[in-house]
Length: 97
Image (cartoon, rainbow, N blue to C red; front, top):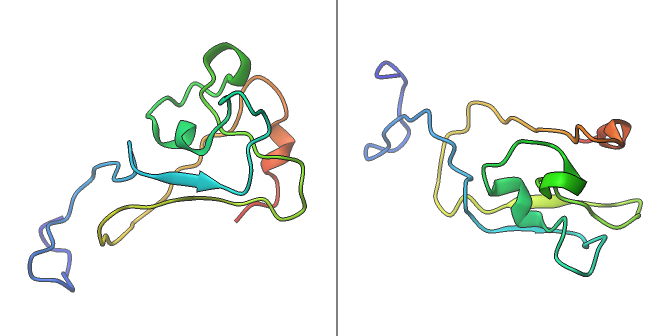
């Protein structure tokens, strides 16, 4: 990483997960009881079992759902990992971008 060019002289390359515990939001929550809220995607739990672990988000049934996280600082992002549900409904993520 030390050979990476920097756009900002104070920028230090890092291999950290910069989204953990940051602010997240989504278009709507499927359940009103707090399950599946946007922050479930940035809590570090990648289990993927919604019902047993509550480790994934769940939006309402809409045509234009969205989810986003605030990185709370400027970063050069090399890659993004998206973990899908493992308990069911794996096809729901098809077509996301």
